[in-house]
Length: 396
Image 1: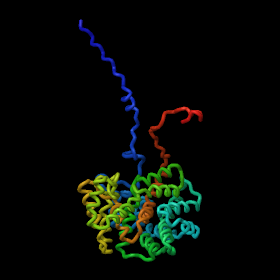
Image 2: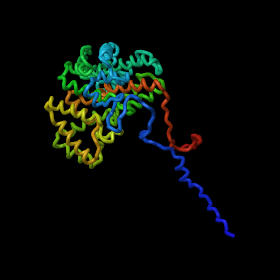
Image 3: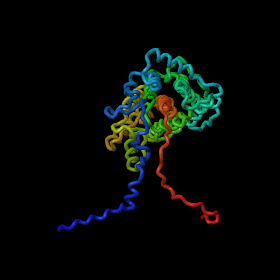
C-alpha cells in the first residue's frame, strides 16, 4: 500500500514580508498620479505637443494673439470676430486700478521681490468684494477677466514706483502686450518685439496640472474664492523649481558673461553636479514643444538688438547638455534671455509669467468648481508610535 505523501507545512510570512505587503504605494511629488480629468490642456504623447483645448500651442502662437488664446482657455473654443471684439473691449475697459489699490501698491517695500508684491496686490483685489467658491460661473468669469485685465497694471505700477518713476496709466487702444510695454517704459517697441512678447504669453498661459495650477485647484476644491486660488498659484509659481526658473536661467547666463566662457562653465557645473536651470521637464520626454517657437523669437530679438552673446551662450549650453546628457531645454531657457533683450529686469520675469498663467488658473478654477470634490490625499506616517505624556519631572 502506497504511503501518502505528507504535506509540507506552510511557511508563515516573515515580519519583513508582512511589512512589505502592507506598505503604501508612495509617489513622492505625486509622480505618475492622475488626480482628476481636465479638458483645458494636454501634452499629446503621439506628437509631443502641448495643446490648449485641442489646439497645438505652436500653431496658436503662429496664428493667434494672446487675447484669442485667453478667450479660448476661458470659454473652450476660439472666438469669432464679434466675440473677440467684445472680449477685447471688456478687457481693456477693466485695466485701470482704483486710487486705493494704487495707494496700496505704493506702500510696498522697494526691496520686496515683484512676485511678493503681485501676490499681495491680487490679494488686495480680493478684499474689494465678498466672493466664495461655488457661485454662478458667470460671476467667476467676470472676476477672471478682471484679474486678466488688472494684473499687468499692478505689475507695471509696482515696477515704476519701486524705481522712483511716476506710474503710467493703461491705454485702451493697445493690445495687452503693447499696453504692458507702454505702462512699463512709456513707449511701444517695434512689432517684432511686441510679437515675441505676445508669443511668450501664449506659451506660458497654461500647462495642465503643474505645481501652481494644482495648488489653485486644491484651494478651489475647498470652495474658497477665485482670488485665493490665484494667490495660492502665485505663491507656488514663485519657486525656482517652477516659475522662478526663468529668472535663474538669466542669472546663470549673466554669470557666464560670454560665449567663450560657456563650455568651461557648464563642464565645471556638470562635474560638480550643480543644478543647471532651464533644462528637463517632468512631462516632456523628447523636448519641450514650446521651445522651438520661443527660440525663434530669441533669434529675432537677437537680430533686432544686435546683441548676440546670449544666443551664443544658449547654443553652447544646449548643445552640450542635449548631446551629452540627453536632457533638453524647457521654455524657461529661451524666455530668460528673450525678456532680457526686451529690456525687462530679471525680477520681473516671473510676474510676467503670472500675467499669462492667470488664464490657465482661471480656466482650471472654473472647471474644478463645475464638478468639485475636495482634494484631500492621505499620508504615510513615519513618526513615533503612540505614547503617553510623561510627568514634567520625568521629561529629559
